[in-house]
Image 1 (tube, rainbow, N blue to C red):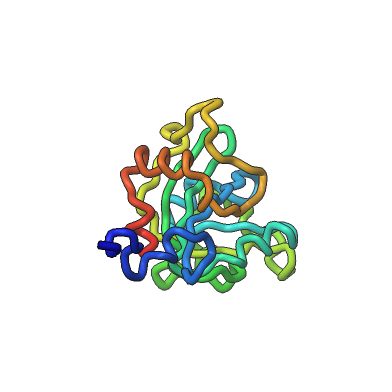
Image 2 (cartoon, rainbow, N blue to C red):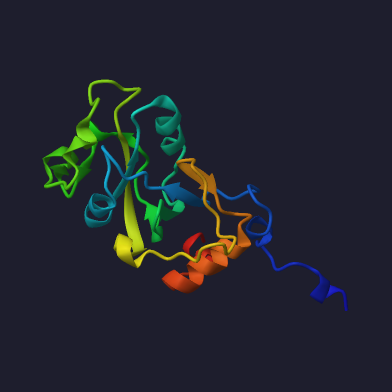
Length: 178
């Protein structure tokens, strides 16, 4: 008669943040500007950060199979994706056998500071599960949805934002992270 009081087998990792689970859900600030562009990220399946150690170091913590919710300042959430390769300097990145820098990028300044390991853009390849144009971004002002000026932040404790993203992008993070 006590069996219904026990948690289902092998599910504790889903309830305790950071416990015995390798991949997580993260907020990722696109940081569109002089060296990066959401249209390029969406079209070619990558994200990047750089132009300084504090931004580079944040993207370098991504692991393969982490999930991200891409946020574009001034618009809202624009995509849900899964990291398919750990970040590396932009000059080492190939997409479908072609050097990333040889692609027809809308923002060619992404190669700025390419010769400086600490300053150059670092890139992680990503499989976009759902992605929308910036004009179709998902956002409700003054609703308590999570945002931060950081490049990367955990969304694990942001239940309101997670529910919003699941509803608006038609995804299940529990399924994506298993």
